[in-house]
Amino acid sequence: MTQSLLKVSDLKKAYGAIQAVGGVSFEVMPGEIFGVIGPNGSGKTTMFNSVLGQISPDAGSIELNGKNITGLSPLALSRQGVGRTFQTLQVFGKMTVRDNLIVAAQEHKGSMLSRMFAPGDSGLGGKADALIDQFRIRHVADKLAGTLSYGQQKLVDIAMAFMAEPDLVLLDEPCAGVNPSLVGGISSLLKELNQNPKFGRKSSFVVIEHNMDFVMDLCHRIMVMVEGRVLAIGTPAEIRGNKEVLDAYLGN
Ligand SMILES: Nc1ncnc2c1ncn2[C@@H]1O[C@H](COP(=O)(O)OP(=O)(O)OP(=O)(O)O)[C@@H](O)[C@H]1O
Ligand SMILES: [Mg+2]
Image 1 (cartoon, rainbow, N blue to C red):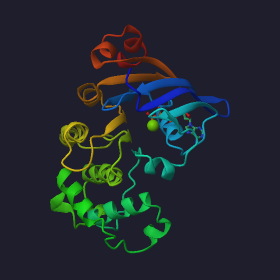
Image 2: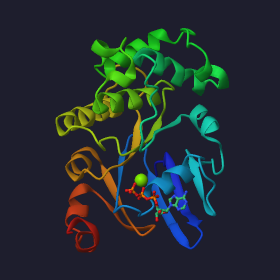
Image 3: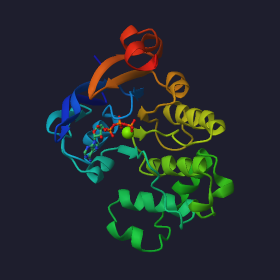
């Protein structure tokens, strides 16, 4: 049997009386695009934050390629090839797009002071330029990120995660707030990065998203979370046809 890339087992996290994540288990296979859907407050972001070392889970284990990575810091995980994007934008509005990418890679390398100084190139300019072309943002590369549309800033935000050449990227709502005309572009970009990147290796993804057309078109398998638990895991067709899922989520 193929070794899973990411294996999450019985993950739990409570905030006081709220069981935000109440025993979640799933596996992501190498090369897979794995979607996570569920109503607001169903624990999707808390699950991400626990997997990525942003918060420590109360229970459960996380394995990457069969190795236990539970409790590793975000920086340690980044060095093991695991990247992320956040539900809210993390770009620096007063830096150019290109400098945002360079600073993101410097952070990956552990330069804690990188945000306080002009980025310089650090030999990372070539990598930034390759990603700028891959993400089709050459025309805005020298603009201050804060002057771009929200959707374009989202693209920069995603590109920043790829400066570390990750094997696995967890994306928290890449389409939220993005103009619908840009959503198709984000989808085809992620497919390209998954199957045929112009730069770096092929990446696997775990993608949280409320945009159902996007999820159904992009993901190989989808996990439905409701009230901190896994309601179903299956192919888009299986999830669309699942009566429990329709009742609890898709039908409303
Ligand atoms: N830092 C926190 N302190 C207290 N409660 C929290 C905290 N973070 C999340 N919660 C609660 O945990 C539950 C799950 O929240 P979470 O953000 O993981 O949901 P989500 O599925 O990502 O929702 P959305 O789709 O709105 O982003 C919610 O009830 C939320 O209010
Ligand atoms: Mg969330």
